[in-house]
Length: 435
Image (cartoon, rainbow, N blue to C red; front, side, top):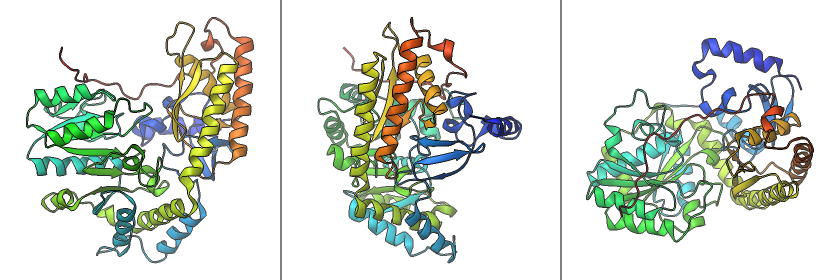
């Protein structure tokens, strides 16, 4: 497998693009640098081709947005049809109403819908509504990151340029720790505007955690904002509200709703959504029509073809098959999470997380044409049973190689590239219940 063109472009990019690309998670250092491709040429279905002509079966799917598949024909046709009519206009386009009605008819409690371009913009817009409605400024947050505006970016290592006062306005609690959230409310009486939480990341809710979050939010007159940028239109057509049986006051969607198009949405009851009339949450390109009509088609495909159930079933075959193979070879590299959104956790013989084991598995798989990231693994509607079978076959080859050739946790001896680098680390401590 040659990567000459990728590496040439990488060197050029270092001179002209800060951090080499527009998205940290796509950068060469986020993978096994030196072994992974760096730049893509084109994609179709479940596969993409790099600039050197190598084809890969892809499980990262554009960092999660590709729910139907690359170059998906019905979505492409909708975009091409609208392209001939125009992209952006001086007045609102009627498709804004059509998409909003479509989302409102599907998503629970979505009496009104506001479109945005990114997940970060959507969640930040919802936070601004909460602050305006409650006349409070502080935020209780539980999530994996991903909202990179000032109020949230202050908590991570890449927080240069963010005003320091944001630290006083953000209070963090851990998933499955309702006691920590309760402590935040006790420490900040009548000051928390909203609770922002992802319904899940990879960990599953325990001991009625989400219901307790809902109850605490209501009790303290704080709005509950569900960050469904990833769970929405992937876990269920109605989102995490339906899947986890929890009601959000404001719910934010993105990524998979547009199958890769730059679009997101904020939904909620009119009581809260009408607050937008008092705010400046507005952008020229929010009315761009290609993303709107493409998203309508994406959601229609999900409904008519039950694509989400298909992805759950196929994901379960990958999830279960992966763990059976790694168990068979006594390699501690299991998938955790959900068949629809999983990640690999690796441990050495001392029960310590092993980045070198993970890197070695990823390295050997990508050399066999299987593209899996150090982070999440997703399934699209374009993946097939033969894709899963091929992946598991290649995984068995890799595990057999490791089992025969490596002892005493010496995985790094076989690494041909660099371990993936951490993009950010948490700089703020989560709140715990006082004893």
